Length: 342
Image (cartoon, rainbow, N blue to C red; front, side, top):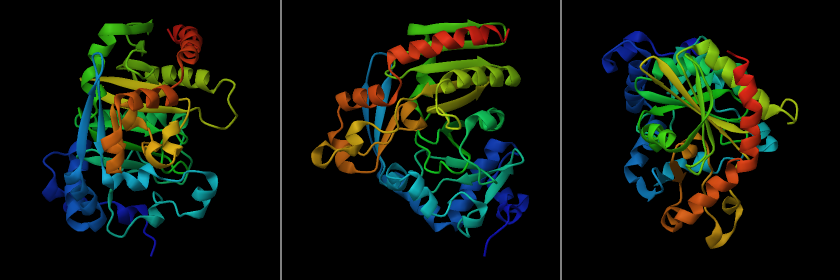
């Protein structure tokens, strides 16, 4: 029998034994503890983290981790073509959630849900109550509010509908532990070594980074409305010349520290690298999304984990991120738009 959002929402009384504070991050952590005790699929997913293996590849001032995570097969191999989407039930719609799954209402129109196929030690999906397509421009205000509310413990991130979202037909974000992604700890040093300054005022800083294999545009501000307008300016640049009604390819990571947001935007060129589609020994099942752009490349197959090389990692980012000339065009068009915000 289908449940309403009110029936899915966990009560304060049910959550009370698992929380130490009333803030959103503590409540999310408590939800995970409660759900692990009653939801078999979630418990199995977290048990699978015990078999995770990690390799580290060092680059100039940063590192990339490769994670063998067998529990991620469902997401990594997800079919996201229109026909496959139409033929399956949406697993984020309240009507289709498993009977044991509960959530925490937030931002009026969202539910914080535990992700049963975790990468992070604590991994959440923040799903809209409405079956509406994945679209960041219309939902960016919610994204930064969630980043603020969860930021003491979690990074919030967004995968575009053509850039790793396994449910491109249903608006959602994800969240996972702060400092788990290498870019969280390394980005300040990466900026110091070679960031370009696109715009700076007393209330907004926008920088570009091109020397970490990935092309990144970083927004930093304590002003939510100004941050929203700056992101909208970038979105307009990325959408210029693109197919109307189709979101430009991007991934977004959001951090909130000491009253200020840091939002990292990664413009994308393609969904998956060419080796994803190879056959036999040349195939590597790595499907880049925001986590991979943050520095952790996950693969559900141990043979891929063992054979991936430094050259594969360079190839992955070179293929899925926009090339240098495209990035230069993006930043050139963005600069006057940011100046007009002042």
